[in-house]
Length: 294
Image (cartoon, rainbow, N blue to C red; front, side, top):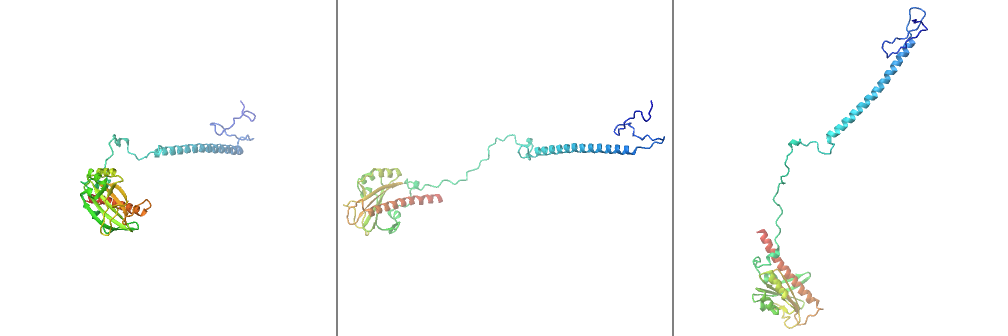
């Protein structure tokens, strides 16, 4: 087979093994390389390498990116993927029984304060000294801007003798043990307060309930207070607090009858009834305080 110039020639492929480089077919037997063909082949080879390098780099970048992403997901999962603390001890070190009750502590709250009314509702607790002077001390009484001058006082165990009308029977029936009285006067109007003492609050409440419009405490005169409310119409009140029932009778010292228009008489009786209530309550407060501090 002829391998002359016109015969078939193998195509040189730089990437295939055992392929031959092209040579020029000169006229002489000493053939020289075809430098132009070699340069072109080298350029082709370099381009293919760059393509491979670029493609490989892209694949490497994708692989690295995937690795980083996987690392981040893994790191996030390791850090706190479930939202729970990551520094918990191993399950083996946790207590297996958590059903024990929480520790209990003694209460630290202070006991409730003593009720002052308890001390004035029963004779067994109400042991403080008692007299007309302790309930109505001093020589005058000030209520708001009004000043009342104090008159005589009285203290008796014969409850019926200090009352009139239907009140003597009411007090006796319910076991009254004592009646304390005091009178005050201002601008021609006088008032007497009578405090009936019982052993229990229940007896005082019953006496107050049984008193009617004909139940009166006797007015008390003397020490600058003229006789009043012996024959004239006067205004009276009835109430109780604790084991004490208290009554007032107020009127004019000149013997004039009291009418609904005589507001001065009404206000005088109301002031003394209010003051009596306050004094009985203070008596309870003083004894409750002494018991708490004792």
